[in-house]
Length: 140
Image (cartoon, rainbow, N blue to C red; front, side):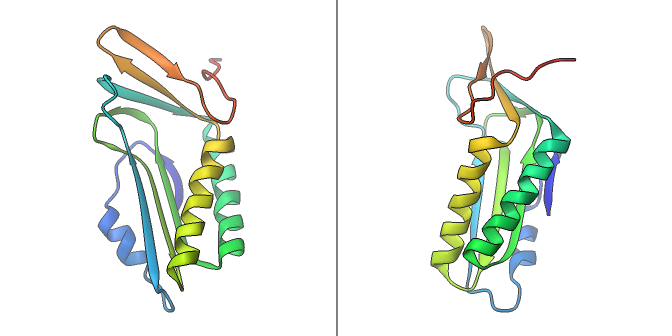
């Protein structure tokens, strides 16, 4: 499953679904809204392009690390401290491939998927500069 959505997910169900025949390791990355003196985080995405990029990343990781299963769920909208932002679940025959595949996916997402976050504070908010060079999303 490769999706961008507002709703949270059942990580336990995703882990169970990832356990395909031949699986020796499942690695779960759960990125959460960190309490960096913020009240909430607002996430926006250029959804069509972001979903296409996530699909490419998943395919590349699957081929490169011989992954048996990949889920990438990125949430958008307003999220409170402690809520899930990004879930990556990968399964592979061995732990080395599963860890490497998961790491490849998160680094690729940070490098170029058009998703932006704004940290909201009691005094206002600030767009967080992305590692991939994208700034604040442009409004139409």
